Length: 241
Image (cartoon, rainbow, N blue to C red; front, side, top):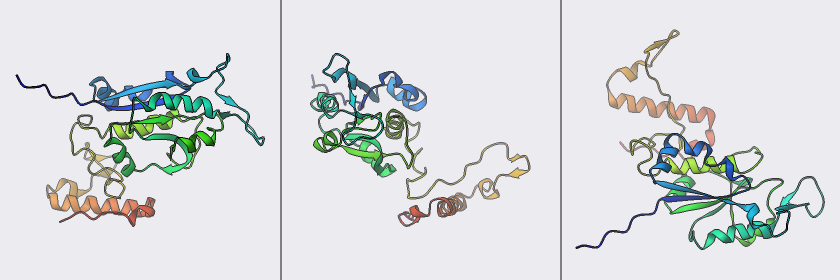
């Protein structure tokens, strides 16, 4: 009898949050939800408030130096983080923050290539800086805007990762030509009806000439990227002939 091969663990997302009931939320639907049901990935939520030491389960306090709002306490957040480090060794620890580095598709691919990640969802005015420095937390931003908390941003990041896991999308080529995959925004798409409210489908897409279609799509991707995101053009990668 041969030894059984070890079962590969699913990619895992752990979210430290004050609002566990927000999850899985949208992550329980569509492709991500089916992948979760099929065991391709797993989701764990950890209640940060459970690591508060006082009878009121306080997780925040007024900021030193004055100012509006409250700040999440370093001792409480650190205890929540510490509870996950042993079980999830090697997992990137990410704090969703508008002051973080912008999330890119390149970083998403890096994250999904590992065993999983730990996400810290902040609230109030943010988290005490000392715990972020002590734990060497990576700060990530979804854009130049502010949300009420990190949970929605965490869901977006997880979804971006999960959809790249083998078996989640129907075809391994489904994401190959999406926005950012080649440093360009995606080309336009068309389907039936062929004519709609006086607007026709571009004739080249009906030609059956795959070479011409490929060239048209590339040209359209470049046009749209130059128009809407010229910052991406410098790093675009030319397809090989």
